Amino acid sequence: MLALIGTASVTGVIARESRGTPAARSAFDKGEAAADAGKLDDAVAAFRKAIAADPDYVAAHERLIDVAQRQQLQDAQSPILSRLKREYEQGARQHPTRAVYQVALGLLTKNADEADVCYNKALAIDPSSAIAHFLLAKNAETRGDWEIQRQHLKAAVANNPDEPRYVLRYAVAHLKSDPDRFRQLALQVVDRFPASPSAAEALYNLAEASSTFDRRSYLDRLRASYPVARFRYSASAMNTLYADLTEPSDALALAREMAAALPAAAFWRQRVAAQEAMARAKTLIGDKQFDQALALLENTPPLAGSHGTTMTLLKAEAAAGTRNRQRGYATLVESAATSPDARVDAALAKYAADLGKASDDVDADVWSIRDARATPAAAFALTSLTDGAPVRLADFRGRVVLLAFWYPT
Image 1 (cartoon, one colour):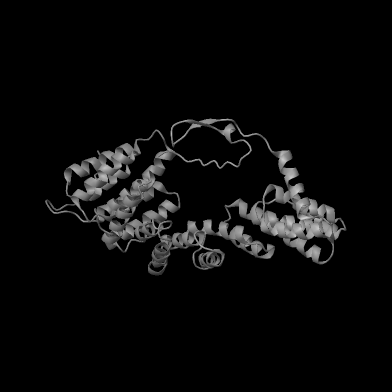
Image 2 (cartoon, rainbow, N blue to C red):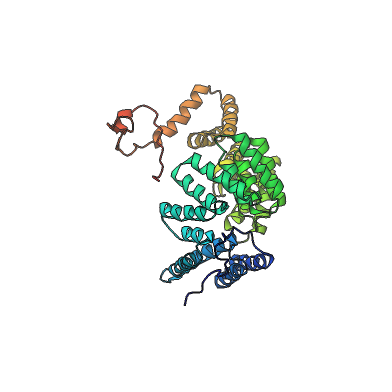
């Protein structure tokens, strides 16, 4: 027997989208706690209880389907999703004025076009269904239909202005077309829903879209107010902050903080070890123990990004301290040839001047390394989008070529 979801109904009356009765929200919160703990059966039971208390509680239906999909991934042979789909199909037949069943069927449909049919049926039943507009916007975004996406998101926000997810996605939809509008809406999410995951996501997006000064303020705000163990976008933001830090002591403090907060993330412990080595090396250089500093750095696994640059600069400084300025110069040239960086370029000019080298000499040394490592790209021919003629990579030999890859939608 199928356990029919949300059987309460009023014949002939359109059932409007609900944000949950107190009893439904209580059960929903228990479901979320169970899901976070990996107790998926308990989560399913709690979300079903929330739906029984309030059949039009959209969030409970969404999370029930999310958890069922997780269960299906754990047991590919189980009929979990097919059984759940039959439940919703039965519910849709028995309660044709309840839009949430069509929304659920759309969520259970893998094909976006077929899902859109369900979401549009939901809107035909209840034109004020914010979730239907929200999901139509999501599929429009996948297709690259930006104007349609914004129209549906605007409708979702208009019909449910108190749902932070809708306001945030509407904000992000303006990121490229209207950056000022994006910032205005994203900050509204933070101000109106400060304790929500969407607020952390909004700050993360603001940081990613901002200049250095504003970026740091958003990242610091996430670090101070949104614990990484509870807010996944805060955890992502701390990776961004770590990459931005150039002072070993600052990076070490952050790495230690994150290693304690996220003990399962082994990479933070590795970062602690690397930053401790660089902090120690900096102290040794300050004490003029250059040989020890250089040996320590040479035995520390190389780093990427800004921290790799910091390590390179410390290596060069330690080498120069051993009266081997040529080795320091060579270290910087190697780094510049591999990954250009403004800090390395500035140090390279100083070391080159001390060695009596001109800028042309530096360029020649850098390009000597690049040319020695260069290998031919794989030959290929593609059809021109302009006139349909074949275009070969070989036709552009000796010129700079930008290759852009994307997936078809």
